[in-house]
Length: 547
Image (cartoon, rainbow, N blue to C red; front, side, top):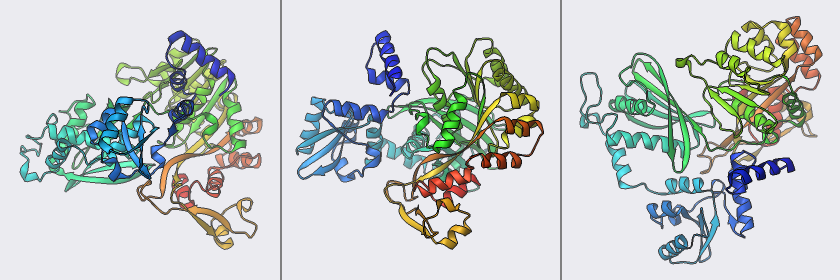
């Protein structure tokens, strides 16, 4: 942490009170685990990251679930006769006494993240009788559920306890499994529930199709949308707290031939933002990207498909720029992160607050930095580029396949080439690849012939021409997939004088890319192969994510 950042945090602490660690966490200067490690060291306690250890389930179940949740304490392992107990507050004497009385063994308390403890309790427990009863009823045969002539559930409606508990269970399990999206899909014979984990859909359960109407209606009630309207797509939002975590669910319903389908995207409001220098870019790419968004004017774009982490990257850059000397404003749909000191506006199309209208209004509010969640049309693109030429720094996302085709996309939207050349400072293209599980990945070596066939650059080959990497195995921690978590693969296009000339001449994206590679740009493929060489992912996963 820099001295300036610490000084700012101390000033905020003096103004508002509270603990310094909490202020740093709120400002996004540190992550929760960093704070907990520091606290543990300060008080001479052990610290445990529950996501990186194997929990003894038999040991964990020795403490009743209600008591474990109340004290946020969970036995995780044994050291001889002593039991290691993860606790949110190891100095809670009452909680320690209760734990010792139940375990009847010596206890060593270690500090752990409260949310990780609650998730581990949920995974380790068998679940209370009420939840199990709700699942049994919700998964009952169609003959046990009364329906009307339109196959709508009567005895298990949107507000019925079994349906309510079933939906809550689906959302809670998605959080435990680190899912980013929940898909509720009716088929000809059943209601399929799938989670998108690390970018890939996994089927987790099948419910009788007879329950489809009740489950979707419950989701629509929670999202505050019209439950009577089933003929057109609808979208809404759910805010809730599960296991001490604040989450938002962006809900979309779509009418299909088998009935309404629902998709819920999980937005974790309490997830910390990574510092920009920890996003994993190649050093040469990173320095160019950082230089582009630290200028006082111009437009910097981050591009990629939906779900490629564009907003996270933009906010990491915004966090570095965030200080009292700058007026920073954002317009998004929806606002996915909260950043102290930043004026954030959410699009509201029903009220007429579109990207273009909000952006036009923002420029009258004396901003230094403006973040546009997505450039979708000519008007928004033109306003954003023109704003970048009048002394504003504009950060925005746009949908293109790679960095070199982004200037062409702006021109196709209707922005004049001379405006693109004058305002555009740089483009970062991004994909998210699944990260190999550190607990089970195994070395994998391609022969010289295989490496050449895969098109691996000679600079990455071993001395004998082979290519050393890693491959998937699968274990309990990664759910047998061999992957756990994701990371970004990037390519950065610096819009220098020559690229600007190419844009004016309306040269192809292939010409722009060819020139940029000659100037040192790593393509997505090259950057990804460096990650493969470093053991972060596999060639198969790289090809899947970059196409």
